[in-house]
Image 1: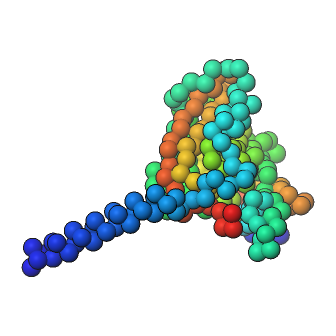
Image 2: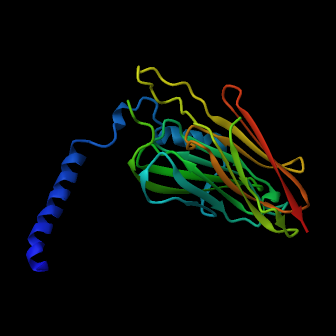
Image 3: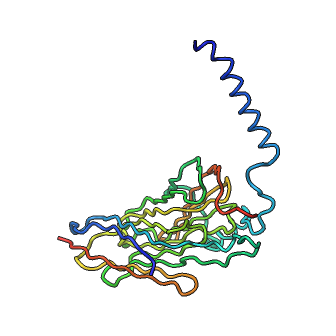
Length: 162
Length: 106
């Protein structure tokens, strides 16, 4: 029985693959070019520079926790946490989150102190496209640490009518 | 007045790190969406959130249109003393909401 079903399911699979390829080639999905005020990787870098200034941006310490594949970009569970003892002399002062292709690069900026106990924040964000999300932590000693993740968004947030 | 939900453990041990969850009803209109006549809908978002522990600021967040509707925020603090945690949201077109909860620390 199962052997008989096989050719059918194989054709179905091939059809889905081909349909996907055609949709991809035709650019169905996201009207990327028509987004007028989209943040570009360059404007995201500018927004990060505005926070960081001339200080070097190190990788590590901070970690983004977000699903790699997002079905609905309108509300994406998002957690960012940073390794730190959170003492008076060594704590996370601020965490900033940026995106590459949302209409605006900034997502959220939080200010913490030693009384936070743990440098971790969760929220729900909007993602307008498959893109890179960057988090930057500012430490009490003035150093900056960052992490970035690539996320795939199948249904984009608030693009209706564009 | 917007409806807000706060989740804080009612009791905690001194020095314990506690989790604070907040949720407030708000559309968070981005300002990037057109209405059905094609005109952009003006931005209407919550821009600032502050949490104070017995009057002292322990957490502050600046929100942008990329925060989903009904902003949900979870963060942590050290339970230092019994008292009140107060929360304040402010935003576009004069939006303002406050909420407070009591915590007993032993």
